[in-house]
Length: 458
Picture 1: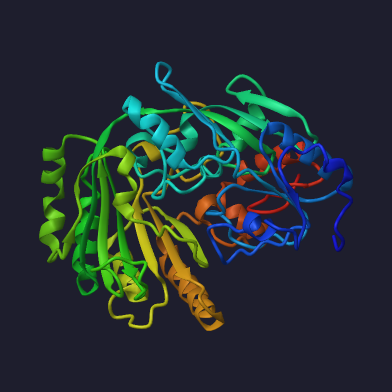
Picture 2: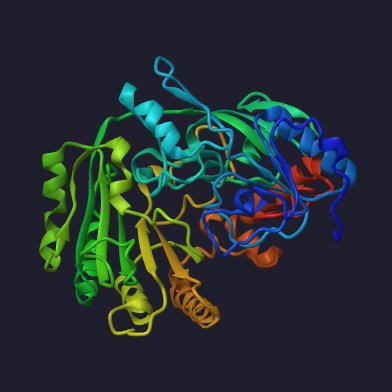
């Protein structure tokens, strides 16, 4: 669409309704990934489910495509024209300690949920950064720090309240609107806008967590030891191997600033002494420069990965690997190891999967990564056009080199900038993809939810 649509019918929205050039518009459309600079025709700053319903009814009446954003951590390409529903004001979290559940509003971050759960000795299945939106993360399946122990975040969802593009509000669970409930857990935001969810919490107050950092020149020794180690560790051990090429930015603390690091991050849910014993082979694999592993309150989980706290322009991608044999390690190091002096990727990670992540959900969902033994993720910073081109080349080369060891699929939350329909479909099995298309046709036949990692209606 090329002109700003008539906003009269949005006058009942309780929150601000903003157009380009108006005060607050730029701040409202900005997300964590600065590579996705949004320019919608109108932003509805929702304050509750009724605002979302009103916005969707207006979009349906005017044929306006719709996008949704809470934090923008998962934004991988710009939203051009259309309607953006911002849920950032909807941050309420209510914990029921007896039922061990949290009711989470659309814009709440995992940090909000953690802060509400921790006083009751309860924890969440959040990812490496608690700054991410809880619902957007969960709709994509949600790969948690403690995934091998407890499974995907989508597996713990009890119910969802969702507004569909026709403006109807549904309360969905294992017995009500089961197709919607299925599609929303792992199918991302293809069939509606979730206004709140009820999710189970974990009886967990502390973990042994942190990172072992070695000089990047010792990457091969640490990676090969870690790959062997992952074949025998129990499901209470969750870990990720990373290569970090950190810029000399003042925001990065010493001694990490400007360095090349090989790292293993871990979270162990058992006793601290047993965790330390399990960790010994990795500490012996290569000289350890920094060791941050300690017993910590689970509410301090951000200390494990120390993800960036400030927005930045990034390009990410992922690939699911069936296994990590020695030849796969060799291929990985040939692409991004210490001999590659001009590697432009800020971070490359291999996450250990399996355990509870391989277990079927108790209520069927659309998560399609349960057959993966490992997950490969690459992140590059798009500081300028030459850097962006180098990041793209390096990412494609790495994924091609690791393809012989892969499942052929990705995870929707980490897929990166989606290409054509065939590329987007790689987040699901063919059977699940076709079922998502049929569900999309039932609830969004005009494809109003057209932004993000979408599937076409069948």
